[in-house]
Amino acid sequence: MEAEKVVELKRVALKLRSNVLEMVGVGKAGHLGGSSSLAEITAVLYFHKMRLNPKDPKDPKRDRFLLSKGHAVLIQYAALVELGYFPREELKKVKTLEGILQGHPDLKTPGIEAVTGSLGQGLSIANGMALALRLEKNPARVYVIMGDGELSEGQLWEAAMASANFKVDNLVGIVDYNKIQATGPIKEVFDTGDIPSKWKSFGWHVIEIDGHDIPQIAKALDEAETVKGKPTVIIAHTVKGKGFSFAENSAAYHNAALTEELYKQAQEELRKQGELL
Amino acid sequence: MMIKLETKSLREAYGLCLVELGKRSKDVVVLEADLGKSTRTVLFKEAFPDRFFEMGIAEQNMASTAAGFALAGKIPFYNSFAVFASGRAFDQIRNSICIPKLKVRICGSSCGLSDFGDGKTHQSVEDVAILRAIPNMTILSPADAVETVMMMEAMLAVDGPVYIRINRNDLPIVTPENEPYRIGKIWELRKGKDVAVFATGYMVKKALEAAEVLSHEGIEVRVLNVSTIKPLDVKAVISHTKGVKGIVTVEEHSIIGGLGSAIAEALRKEAHPPIEFIGIQDKFGTSAKAYEELLEAYGLTSKAIADSVRSLVGR
Image (cartoon, rainbow over all chains, first blue to last red):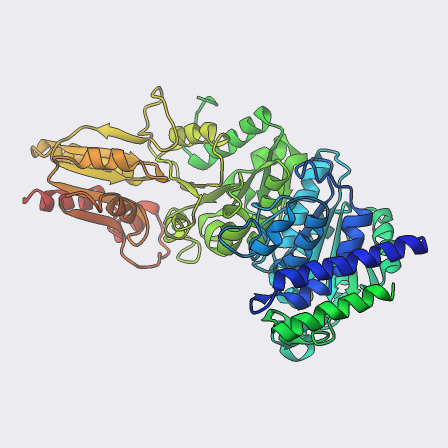
């Protein structure tokens, strides 16, 4: 990937974090941690990799982006608004009766592909989509992002077996491996063990990357496209709350309200990160 | 009729119709959880192997995968025994399927007590109750093979999820073959002014038998087949109860949350005569050596219906 493109995508990731921050706002709860750990991955997918048609969100040829960890939907809204799927005013109405942006992914929102948020269901839905696309000989691809805490849901492993059984290779799983779940570090709360080995033993092609390194993300997504006859999962090592010093590697901002002071600090930190680009 | 019916088996009729629907629409796909020989999806597998997906014994994954198929424009039918198709996958039905109102068809086979030998773990006495509580869901409960075919023919057009409850055993035909059918229809299978009996599934036949006996005693029973339990035709329910001395509901399901509850809810704003619920009395099923023997043990008989009607008319 060219250096210029990398910088451009870094700017996009910052913009996405800034949009997330705007939606979290002051005094309202919002999933800051698990949304910001996905900023670079979302930037590369939506602004580089995926074939999209924002003018026709239902275009059958579009690639699909699903958040199995639906609570991080703010990062998807952040990208969709930049691409023009809905007007910017909607960000202010997130999680209100007046808006179209629900607390978890909902088909009310243009660009949202499935209802997720009850954890563990996204990979199954993605498998169904991928199998349907294969029946239609439609080249579109399905990207599904799972949380690491979410990997304790049994249904995900049923789905992981199904992807391998059906040799689903038009689907890419991405694990947001930030190592912290809602109430604390995964190692302490509910240790899910050796994640890469688990996926390998379930018959997946496994790629491990730094989930904040844009060239690594892009390269892994390209590699996934070359793998035939089996599904690919990208284990993305990430930092929960990335980009916000007070929230990094902390369970406290999984879903928390910001004070006015912290909100200003967060804005300032993003501004400084922008200056360094 | 969509197919020439030479069977009294609801599940055979279901399987044959799946094949016919597969011919009519290339979008029909079938998902199975290792019970295809019993649910009769094996017929679809033989006809359309590319559109048949054996999902293994993993009902939750099957339900959400069906949602994915529907989101990509397919009309998936997923299949298992009723108890697993509904209860094992409740949250997936609710979140993956019903919130987005997807065109997923769920076949709950071997419903009620109809899998008499396998006992309580495999018998479904709560499936209608739990699924009825989910918004956007349509719930069908055919009385026989003829009605199963009619429902299958009407099913593709329904905008949203549909659950169909299929009995395991061959059942006598009660549905008039040449009458028009639509989802939501309440069939008046016997006219009568004294008591209205709302029945569903195999219990429609039991109600007709009871009505025949009662007629000889001078009690005329109106027998109604409520085969669409949700959405319920509330107006029809109200009009069928005008002027009767009593109402009986009969279902092979718990009396909590099923047909009886739905009828009582429909009548809640009306002045209405007493309602008697015949069904499974807040109990699990059990193993038995024969279906009729099991129904008798749970009071799901024409005699029980007749006794209930007699008490409502004061005899």
